[in-house]
Length: 367
Image (cartoon, helix red, strand yellow):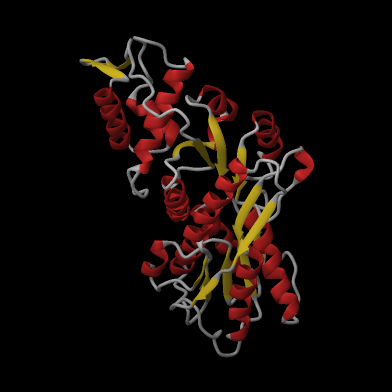
């Protein structure tokens, strides 16, 4: 298996259609959903949908009827996985482009470890509400699960399912929770340290009015990064409150709207710390529309160090999270959990790094 590249998008759909054929959702000689509908449901281009269908036709899972569409073959290929092969299901919360940019290094690190043991992975979206079906219908049965983002909203539903299925589990949480009656492992960046470093960088430059465009607290990173921001302000002797904090759903447009609100304050911020680079992109857009210069008028710090962050105007100061290292550690813990299912739960926090580029500087004179 090669490291993940952009083809991951169409390959996810390919895997999902195969699982639905195996599970009986798509039956022999019946049509699958039209290209446009699949594109809409998965949030991917029609080009990616057609590529997935082309591959499935080549492999014998589907056949085409001219001017009608793709249909399920009456004699699909037999499972080609060797007996004893371990199957891992990777659950993800989103197929949005910026989330893909975030998770791709993590999954590459995960595959680096699992490939050595001939373990193969199938991706599934957390948004489609078919978590248990993925585990029930998988052939061969999945023995392990990786959740790249386990929110507090989905955790009460997912964890009992994982417990019943007795799968080895690794999540992105900062601490494990044994109240669900089984042991599992988690690996995460030290989000508190990341937010603290970002905020103190702005403090050291002389900023006192530091806004936080936060991610949703239903996600671990959103909650803990907010705590790190507030902790840094207290450490610097700066009064903290809700006036300069805006919680978002991790979307560029949310950050854009939050930034516009904050700029309307009687005493607007001179600096912004965004919970992710994606949110920072929305901050930069709002500042640009107001003709505010970065960093001469306002400074901006993001978090995660996405590839695009070094190409913004100006290049974004951010916190680098070790996503590939997180993936490798997830793979190692997963193999250990499969071999030793009853060992105690473990949580690993990995250090982050401040990357100073051109979006931060001292506040304007007189501020």
